[in-house]
Amino acid sequence: MTMTLRALLLVALAYPLAMAQAEGPPLDVKPGLWEMTVQPQMGAASIPPQTVKQCVSAEKLRQGFAVGDQSRGTCRPVSVRSSAKVLDVREECKGESGNWLITAHYEALTPETLRGTGQIARSDMPGAFNSTVAGRWLAADCGGVR
Image (cartoon, rainbow, N blue to C red):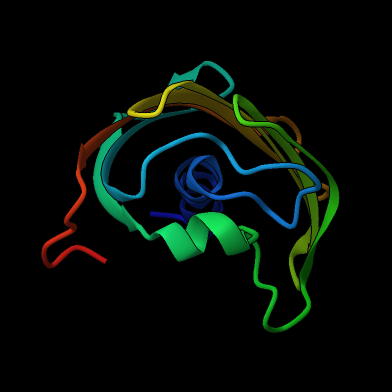
């Protein structure tokens, strides 16, 4: 899997379950074990859907986090709007192979379901990677899933 596709999947999986230093409340979703199905797409090429399980703690929902590599200072949130039902994020990343613009829009349909879209555009590549996401809460206990 290419680095860009990994980053796209990260966008699709990470943002809906936490806010990225947003003003306003986090999405109104339950902490615990979530199943996320991501349908990536680049241009006319469709990539098979990916389904993963992710553990989201109450602390992670409160603190928020960003998708990009904040530890090395390569990504920074540009714009974040959050409410209990909608999360919109724009983030800029800089890397050796070029700059990226990440955008994401998520909706909490219920505390146990969400849907969203994400996009990654790179300055050194034409077009963009897009994705749609559907998430569902499975349980309060994450078991061995991180």
